[in-house]
Length: 231
Image 1 (cartoon, helix red, strand yellow):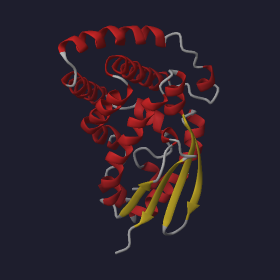
Image 2 (image 1 turned 45 degrees about the vertical axis):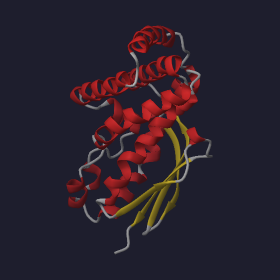
Image 3 (image 1 turned 120 degrees about the vertical axis):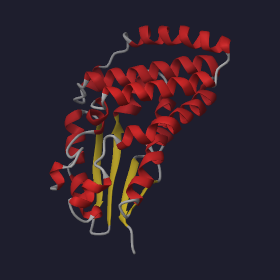
Image 4 (image 1 turned 180 degrees about the horizontal axis):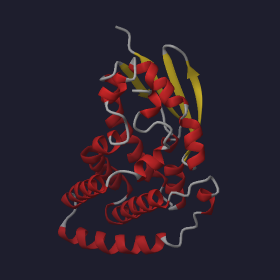
């Protein structure tokens, strides 16, 4: 198999997320709701339903001009993220920001691996295209252009050698949307999700993955680094 034929090649993360199957979306939604409701009392569940409806109505008035100016015109993706943010904001109204984040981390524990891996090629397909680290170097080299076209990320490749590949995200649509909704911390569970799914996936391919910081946590960039694992 050629690298350019692998699932996700040249596809921005926002477009990949929007293209999750309806089956996966339904499954993730059900799991997420189960986790949230299991952490709320009966009265809090009523409050949450009330606030969630209010937040969804409020979301329709949020001006997305600055996001669309970046080229983000994937309405399916935007609708999914606005739903997530409305969900988070309602939860924050009920239990406070700290507990809302804790609960959303639990949601990610239950959903993130399957969701994120749905956007990546299978390890078997990667191996069929060649040595995994070399395959992913080629796979990721086109990511900045795809991300920019989609209005998803501003990212630059800061290292590209035979032993290491790193790209740095300097602008992130997930974070910027959260800021527009007055809840920048709502992006942190999304960052957490990456660290649930990616280390094991890349380790299975003989690649070390790490990220020392994220924009949502106050770093200057999200520094995604991949290194060829030495035998």
